[in-house]
Image (cartoon, rainbow, N blue to C red):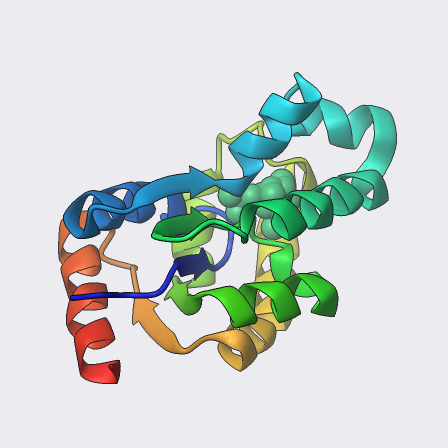
Length: 172
Ligand code: S3P
């Protein structure tokens, strides 16, 4: 079956990269992780970019990468969790892919990210409050832009990618 590009959006720790890779394999698409492209183009890790140059600089890079990379076809893109913050990003993403929101609860996000040091926005003392507040706000945006919402609380990437494929077929 001939699918459009696919973009996975959702909160940090929702499984976008893991599910994205499996999904790409099943569809014989190319998997592209936007955060990895940013790191490769900058030759430094995201946490270093945030620390040295701040979030605004990172968001500029993110938009720059999106403008280039969405010219490709037959790709599964794993987007950074904050991609929905800019309308400009979502305009390009919506025009060039089917958008899947991988949804998880704040508790699961917290459990999965509690020892994580690579996500600067939640590398804070009061992780629980920050995650709950951020996910609360972001969930509205993820749903607004999603063509399909899939729950990944069970953290079973094989099952989640099969569910996505089934839903994509129904949608066509
Ligand atoms: C961010 C999510 C991260 C990364 C950056 C900012 C966010 O990506 O882009 O740390 O604002 O939610 P993941 O969702 O892949 O962790």
